[in-house]
Image (tube, rainbow, N blue to C red):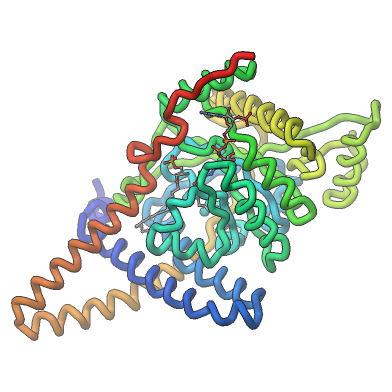
Length: 412
Ligand SMILES: CCCCC/C=C\C/C=C\CCCCCCCC(=O)SCCNC(=O)CCNC(=O)[C@H](O)C(C)(C)COP(=O)(O)OP(=O)(O)OC[C@H]1O[C@@H](n2cnc3c(N)ncnc32)[C@H](O)[C@@H]1OP(=O)(O)O
Ligand SMILES: CCCCCCCCCCCCCCCCCC(=O)OC[C@@H](O)COP(=O)(O)O
């Protein structure tokens, strides 16, 4: 182990990173709170400010992934769709099997310039997590209780609010609704069987209601669905603690594109594809091809939309199979480079907060008061326990019991 790697694995280094993250995060949360009156005067300005404030927090975690652990992220996609990424609103459908899949998602957001503005359909419990959850409140993240009777109205309303969002965003949907565990997989395949659907090997059966309500409410506001599949090389199961330890991983992300050759049998769908090519891609010379999936192609009817999503997951499963067999996804690699901004932001907060910590420690030691020193030690322990609890939110072993309970099956 090299000296740098040894340094990264030290508890003290990790404690410093957590201190900077927590204190800067709370400062940003406070600044976000101060923007509340501005929402009444200029909602769009308040949103733009909050995007930048949110970036100060989330980009620290991205910097930890990209620069501290040195994790590499490779993108497999269609080079012709590439210029659109970050320049349009899109719904991202991603598999949910890894503890840091959200962080890899953030990294790609950062590389395409939509980190501060990106959204997710997240479980309500996450809104209570200090720093991140509180930040999400100001970023208009859509929360759900995973109880459809309650969610159908609140989720639709929150999505409607995003229609006039002032900056481009990606809206992340984990249609599986929870992270994959063997037990959840077994139960969800029983549900698949009872619905007469093919079994999936690498995914849970997707929950279709959230996808349908998102597509319906973002029609005309989002241009496309980016069907994304993430995997890590060498069968690794990366963790946030691993990242803090400086462990390097290699993530592969496949953003799929559909190709269609449909000059014959001209119908509504091919017409949509035609207009899509005309509007976005301006490539009408080759047989009619459609790259990322335009929202116009997704059925409006709830049952048809659900069937469409089930088919998408069956295809996603085949991409995972391809990855397992060959160690790569289909299609060309067009890796976007990492940008310096996340690192610059992180260094800024490190310098500021370590300087203040230094001043505080000097005063503490020179005061010589045993009580103050003990109180400071208690404070440090509380901070590290607090951060450990936050990291626990990302751990699959501590995940929710959603999808874990056997459901009465209707075999009709
Ligand atoms: C690469 C680029 C990345 C870009 C990244 C961009 C942005 C990043 C921004 C932020 C990153 C931060 C990440 C934070 C992550 C947080 C993520 C989460 O919190 S995931 C959990 C919350 N999200 C979801 O659950 C979304 C999916 N869920 C749904 O859509 C649900 O439908 C619902 C709207 C939540 C409602 O749930 P509910 O349970 O009430 O209803 P369901 O429709 O799901 O259930 C009834 C339905 O399901 C069938 N059923 C029953 N059991 C199962 C089972 N085990 N598996 C599958 N299906 C089951 C049941 O038969 C019913 O079927 P039917 O609909 O036919 O009646
Ligand atoms: C600079 C780096 C500093 C890092 C130090 C501290 C980091 C603290 C990080 C707290 C992160 C909290 C955000 C968690 C996002 C978790 C996303 C997630 O994966 O949620 C799970 C849900 O989808 C489903 O839940 P389950 O039903 O599986 O249960």
